[in-house]
Image (tube, rainbow, N blue to C red; front, top):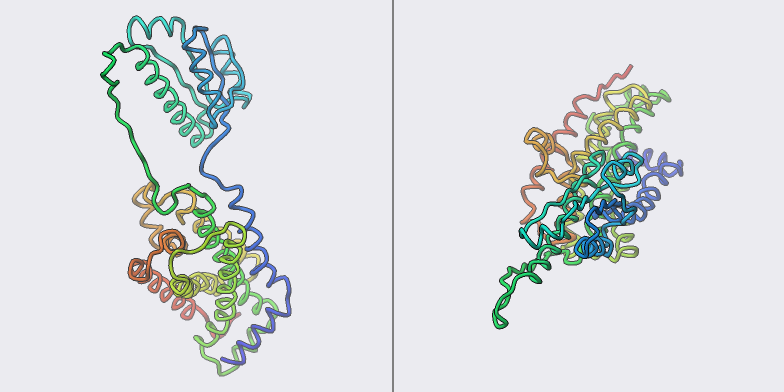
Length: 370
């Protein structure tokens, strides 16, 4: 056991490319990606078709133009010209203000506006329509207050909503994104390196030499796993330090809880790579299989799409995805200050996944390869 550990560490430190991939690249990406990843959509291009040219239509236009969400690209005379802007990707939304808009609003107490969105980018279209509806509702409220004549002592009835965001009151996206991206990067680099490790032994022919030694199967697997497990913990440490220095993220919860869960999680994540390495014959196959597995981990991990909004069958699949647990737990500890008692169900699931994956890797490893 000691011999194979020394061999693995010597191989790793002898190859600076492996160290750069495990340590330097994740930290570089952890610093860069949260600066670009932002769920809030701004600078939505909108074309307005103003057929009324009234004081009310101009007020609405100015209100939209003053919003941080929209950029009023052009004013068009009709919907057909505005639609050309959408087809040429100049505009994402079209707001049509019909003729007699102001007159209908005063005489009939109601008027109709048309909002058309470019559905090619569904997220941008949905959020853009929602933002525009909020602005129009606010405009509608202001118009009603100015039109309704009430006694001076009587205030216009209205319901005010005060919302508060717990744990992340200023909606700092790096605070939300850094733990998730750190979980993904550690998984991607660690599992890929592990999968390539055993396959490399097959390709250079040293697997036969290892097979004739009295070493047990579990000793061989642990000898391959432990070096990358230690480097994974080092990567998590550097990630937390980078999050503090660059984004001023200080975990509210205990660091010991983070490391305890990370230690169990890394056994599961590296077990994926070890199991994969026992199923393929060369590094090309290992890389391709790793790519497809990582796609599943990323898309079903809950970083970009909430797991609760996925179909029921997808949520069942996500229950077997170790990344989804790690992202949820890191966010809970760093942002909410959750304790091990709060996260016991996730810890129990992660222990089971780690045992299953590494047991399969040991069982699948054949003493005589090739």
